Image 1 (tube, rainbow, N blue to C red):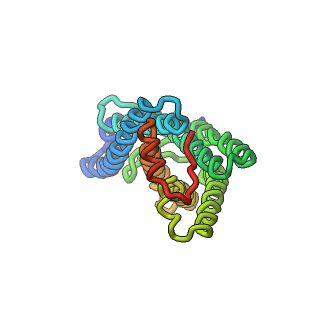
Image 2 (image 1 turned 90 degrees about the horizontal axis):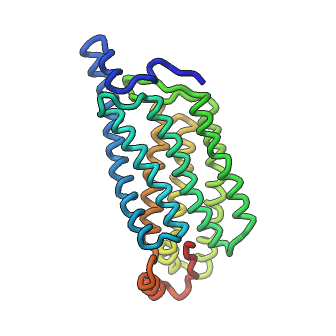
Image 3 (image 1 turned 120 degrees about the horizontal axis):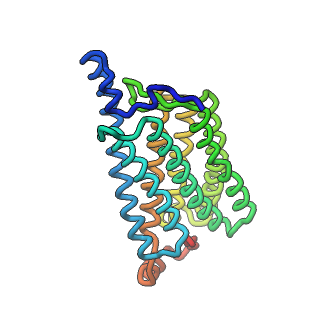
Length: 285
């Protein structure tokens, strides 16, 4: 484990160490941008967390609801912790903040993958091979935590603020962990969309959207864009923000979709009465 001295500073200490007023302004600019992004993410995460708690109260035994809760709790913790690190005079160090972020990111991503896997499993008539393949591809995801904790170091920079300096292979490792399962999800959902389109033509789009398949495809596309953007360092040092952006998009879309599903008997009757007679129902467990 390598610890950089600048990574042990919190934001206040980092500003205090500025040699001149110009340097302090430059450092403050990077921190302000990071704080702004964290506040925006926090607003989305709090919204998603609020709806997740409501759904948990309405349907405490549904797997989809628990996945939403497990995804939003780390999100709120991450954004609040990072904002606290920036605002509080004696807040956590850059390294501590990043360690919390990476754990929350992996937990949230795994919860989202379980949701996607559940949907893919259901729309393919409970295909056990698909289920086993998905589980095997989700299991190695904590490897990213080990790389960040023991093979990376954190540092404060004027341009970005708190930043992770990870090994050159890490973006590709993360890509290797994320891409296969997202490709499987993409193929599985596209096959269903293609099959429904061939059977019912353009009439199927409304019900496909209602069943969440379009949402699932958007989520998978967001995951793949994040994987490519980070692996190819499209934004330079800011490329790691792809992970945060994907986190926000995935959390919001999945919570919004699950929120619209029936959670009570009356909701289920309304849902069933509004369905197209051609479309088969793929209800979440």
